Image 1 (cartoon, rainbow, N blue to C red):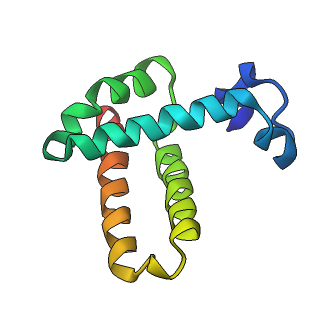
Image 2 (image 1 turned 60 degrees about the horizontal axis):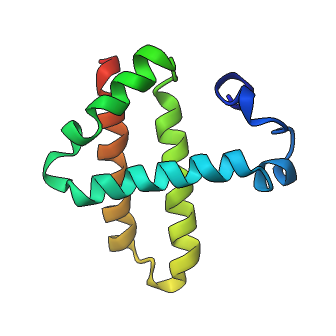
Length: 110
């Protein structure tokens, strides 16, 4: 996946290279900003991500299964940061939100 979609990011051949790569960090920030847009537009998430869905489907040709894979990353980070406060209820709410985001990003593919 990395070399196909992120060939212009340079060295992505091991965890250390990925962790130290400024292009990866920048893309991570972009993803988090996108999630923030979703949080701010909970009443209209599908429309919030409509343009991104078209971009990823028609221009970038991203496999929509990758949206689910990448959505696991913020869930893991939030769980690690919250520790015991990451209750089942918090996990369920976060996973529900991320599932809606994933569905919205994949909407153009349906």
